[in-house]
Length: 111
Image (cartoon, rainbow, N blue to C red; front, top):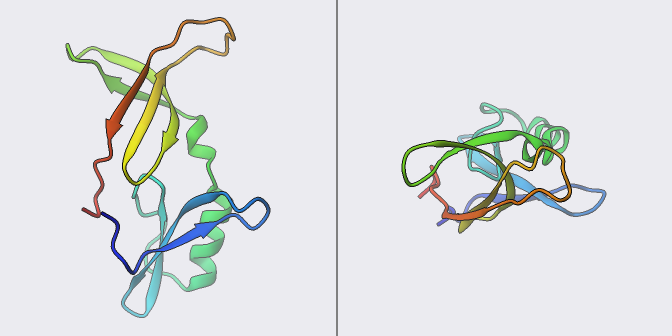
């Protein structure tokens, strides 16, 4: 459950949700959709700019997921919400590659 004082942040151009800005004392902290701090305690404008500049670029990264047997799988994030994360096996850019999707409950540092 997200704290009630976290403020959703949307990109100005397309209104896509890219994270939150949360209060920290008299300052603010930019937080990614995965719940990770992108800044320390900064002023509102710096937090806003950090989220706008980072956007969703980290979605393009390759991540590692351990399957049920503990073997690492190369995956890409497909969907991130406060409730869950959906990943799929990396297709290496091939449009006809077989991929497997995994949905995981969100483990959030804020819960």
